[in-house]
Image 1 (cartoon, helix red, strand yellow):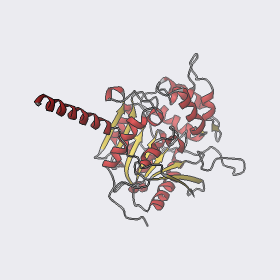
Image 2 (cartoon, helix red, strand yellow; image 1 turned 180 degrees about the horizontal axis):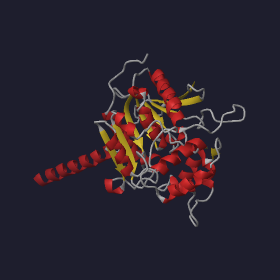
Image 3 (cartoon, one colour; image 1 turned 120 degrees about the horizontal axis):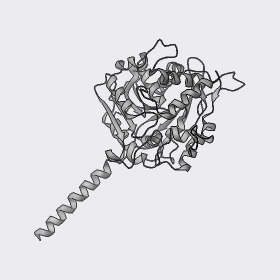
Length: 367
């Protein structure tokens, strides 16, 4: 009898441990959120789109979360993963999510012959005009005075630059996915792209989707340039990469591309006119910060993200590297953090738990 009781107790303990392990990868699910799109204009006149994923019930004190896509993609990068993208998963869990389409991307206004716009905007234009307008719009719609903000890749660097401005007071938490402070050492791919930047024509678009279809610059390479640069994870299958490329990649402003190339060349992070040093300005940021990194990210080495964390003045800051060594299903790359087959079991729950732990208690409506 005693042995049976001991066996039962042991079984219950093992079951509890298993359930605790499962809980660590668990996100609540309230069901499909309502999706609405809001259009508004930046101060310099571009028509921008903000998509809201509205949960059925928000968890206590949660601030709205604004997601900012990488600068070669669009808002669908947060919602294209088998209809279980990061935006959808977090909204199903009770967080009001807004996703911005920058100018020239997604369903926001794009250059065309009838509007006489060109692919000539800089990184600074996205920070000064698009981000400021979208944050104010999200606060207006939600009726809140602060917002959480999440950025992927160069979109995350735009968040960092934005947080240094007068609008930084509206930010409660910052989450960065695959974001470096700068690029101290370039890999072979980045050096190759830097050489190609000298051939760019001003105000002409860089066709990202076409880049996926052409061969890699390396002789004999089997992967496309897009795959080598962004989707180096072996865990991403061909169908997933093709789906992302067809629905999420966008033409890139040549001015923006040349500005990023100058950062690579000079190991810096500055405005186009060199008057603002965003790298030095990182010390102005005090918001709680989470950086999510992939072990094999070709564009944002975790060591560069660690430097970023060292430079900000936030007292609450965390860097999480997603790798097999840290107990996750695989070593993650730049895109795998968003669309990897197990991202909704590895990455998304970690972000959800961090947001829930850092929920904002401020509910005052912004005037």
